[in-house]
Image (cartoon, rainbow, N blue to C red; front, side, top):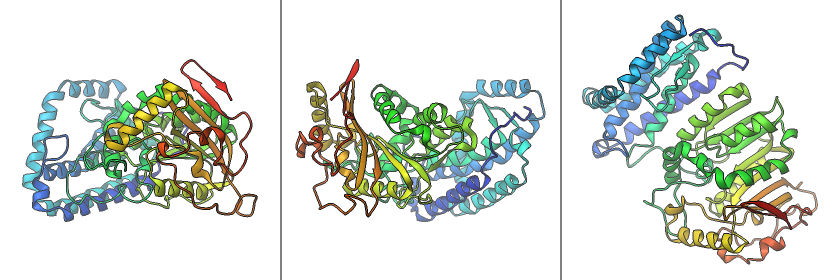
Length: 478
């Protein structure tokens, strides 16, 4: 396949190298920390043991060296040649999966775990050297692939896509390991769960009644949820539209999103609401979500980047570089300390005049919505895994020291969401002093039900006309 016209900036080679280096370091820790019993234990969701799966993660990098040769060959041939080749391979899907399974079983027997990290070091070093020598024209060459063979194979992939593939493959399978001491990349720290976009882990193992889910459960849930997250549009789209209308995105030149999910909101903003030269940076704790977002936003080229968060604060982003900080359906998962850490990071990342833009599940006001939210909270307090670890909260009281420019309650299909747009107060401005301590509003049933409607917890007066209660067939302003 000939090089495609490319109006976008070149592949970020430094980012690809950094991702490979991080995978190499994580792999070495995984192997060195594993006991013989850990290696013999079955992995999660597939038939391999942990040792067999570790070999398969190594094999993902090994196979790319052969695939690079194929791309160079088919890249010089007519498009029909690689299309026919991909169809032939797709027709052999069943025998391929059997060979793929047996191959990793055999590889794990032939190569002991202590030899796997040096092999990965060698192959990654070779891939990085190849990447540095590639021309921009070569990186745009591509071929058709058997998309049924691997979840990260697309029907058509360029050489640039191929250099990204092995790390995506590595991170996906890392979540299936059941080692006792999995490296804590992306699993610890105050912002860990937040980086996974809030609603997390359908697994009940390890969840604590009344305390939500662990960050590791959040990661695993999102890796499994994948594209199905878009099915939440039935109640998320209307609050998102409210947020977009209120946050002056046409005036924003740079946007940061914590927990970008599948990239659906980012795609909408970049395609319809942000200026043509605006840039977007999204993060997520789930490798599956990062891969889905990267694929979804690829058409925007260098305007959009999506990185895997490592689950720690401060976030690895320069201070004062963004006009908007997005956290959409994130705070409804977080505990008090984590929520405060995220808000502190928003204040650090925003430049003067920047806005925090947040949406969260909220307690319902109308009878049906109130019944739904109370039932949801009751389930969460006893078995948080049944509701993905999230619950209705009051978002506004978290923002002491912020000037709320817009607040709305939007209800769709009896699920109520709170929409907030807020700006940090200057330290020496009115109301800029630290407020007195107060109880954190994470359990909606322990707060005064009238506080949210009366706005009694906001230090500054609300903006007139910014309260909305939505219904499935319309909204009314209060």
